[in-house]
Each structure stands twice: as C-alpha cells, then as structure tokens.
Image 1 (cartoon, helix red, strand yellow):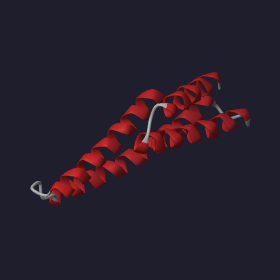
Image 2 (cartoon, one colour):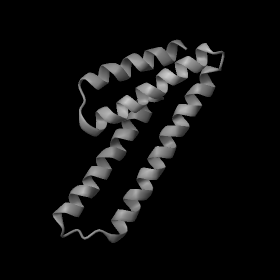
Image 3 (cartoon, helix red, strand yellow):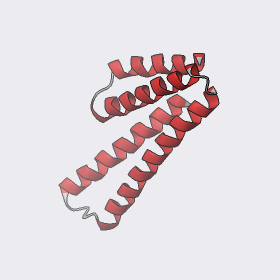
Length: 104
C-alpha cells in the first residue's frame, strides 16, 4: 500500500503543474490510485490493485489508438482542422504514456 500512496503523492504533485488534458488524465490516475488504496485497505493484494489500474489505462489507450488510426485513414492532411485534431489525439496518447510510465 505504501507504493500506491507514494505514487498518489507523485501524481498529485504533478497535477499542480499540469493543465488541460494532461491534468484530466492525472485526475483519473489519482482517482484510480485512491480506489486501489481503498481496495488494499479492504484486504486486497497491492499487485491486484495495480493490475486493475494498469488494465484500465491500457484499455483507454487502446481506444485512443483505435480512434487515432481511424482518423489517420481518412485524414485530409491539407486541412488544418484535421491536422490539429490528429495532434490533439497524439497529445492525449502521449499523456497516457506518461501516466503509465509514472504508474510503473
């Protein structure tokens, strides 16, 4: 449980200096870690709680990757709005990657 609390403190610290989508993802990660701490307190194994959070993050990342792939297939790269949408999805994906790295 100590590892989870340490990770939660790191996430909350990083939240203070983030904004936008990054902050939203960090809030989701913090909520997941808080849930996991409650599970551990209820007698669940820390590894099981970490696995559940990691599973959720991977599943969310997979959905985002699928969305990015679909947009890339039909994107008109001469359209600035579509380019910006692709950049936004890429930024979200990078944010998920950073959160997963922090979690591990």
